[in-house]
Image (cartoon, rainbow, N blue to C red; front, side, top):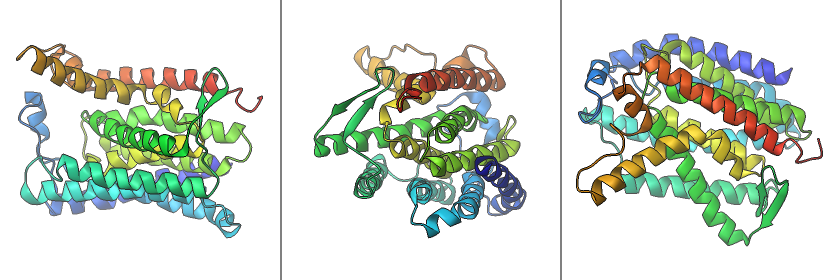
Length: 329
């Protein structure tokens, strides 16, 4: 019941926040700058308010404080750790968005600045989770129901790069109206169901419920044609939330399945750039990342979102099948 209530409150608060925030963003001229190298038809989105991720960050925060308060009084802060970790990434994204809006161009923080800030946040979170006894260097293998025991330093380095990679993969996926928020809905459902089924993980499930509600509330304004974009503020927060939940469950490799869309989007970018350099100008995809390739193939944005979300949902079901026997369930 707490999961559903957190979802409902987050949805309502996010929806209300959207009504209040979008006019403010418009008045501040906080409009998105569209890259000239992107699809030409995306230029019509120029000036659409960005930093809209603030609305679901607020909605989720309100929900987890209300429904996690009693647990915090008893010393259980896992949902708060997840939120604050995601919030750190949201702040990094906000700084990036602010720089873009201030200078009216599609460049904010440098890649090095973002990487170092994200890496520092990841290491701090992992050390905190380890200190709190919520994380072990035993790498759980889905489907095989076994672990690979790693040295803590080796695990820390690997885990930090998994987190940074996940966060930036979600950011890359945010390129079509409603895409990153829609494909993350099944992911939030997956983590919520796990926490409901497994005992001792109810606070993570509650956070996942709040995340789901926040995403649905945001989609009221972000579905095609979008009235607002989440910006790096929202996409980096989302990436941080997804990564943090995987590590809070102590099974980061599950991100390979639940994050399959994020991974494909990122790999399409890497493959495109690498092949372009190796062949001195040839391309594998019509345009990268992957969602733009399908747009260039004639898919409408709504079809891209629907298909990618369906793929995300299917792989989340596979992920559940891969971990359902972890505790002998």
